[in-house]
Amino acid sequence: MRITLAVETGTGDSAGATDDLYDWLRQDPELQGLVRRESPVGAPAGAMGGAWSEVLSLLLAPGGPTAAVGAAVVMWLQNRRGNQTVTINQPDGTQIVVTSEKVRGLTAEGTSDLAQRVAEALRQPPAPDSGEEGTGRPAGQED
View: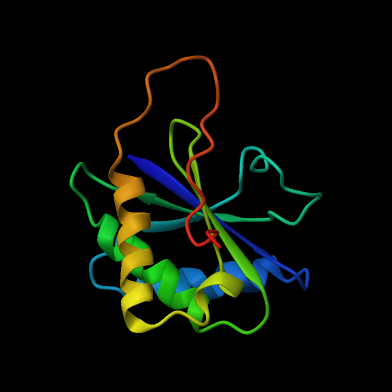
């Protein structure tokens, strides 16, 4: 399964944030050989203008390191200043959205729970092709 990750910042430095996330993911022994940079074919749904200059892609085998992806994204966002959003796009169009403003104040238990929910969302089988694009349940967006 090929997933893509796109980073959006409130400051307009999405390219710099994408570079930082790329470096962060490559430090994880389970992910370092799986992450690639690429130019997006089209901006993710809801994206504005040219903010999405580059995306990261990961090729995950069935049963692959979804827990590592979830944990890495959540931890990266917790360590960022300012507001960033990571959108994980799955092959069926489902999106998982995690924002830094919702993860920064989480306890260790909350962080682990959110990382697990992201991983579980990544493990969900693709929805049957109904002709509609999936929206996924936004992770890290609950109030």
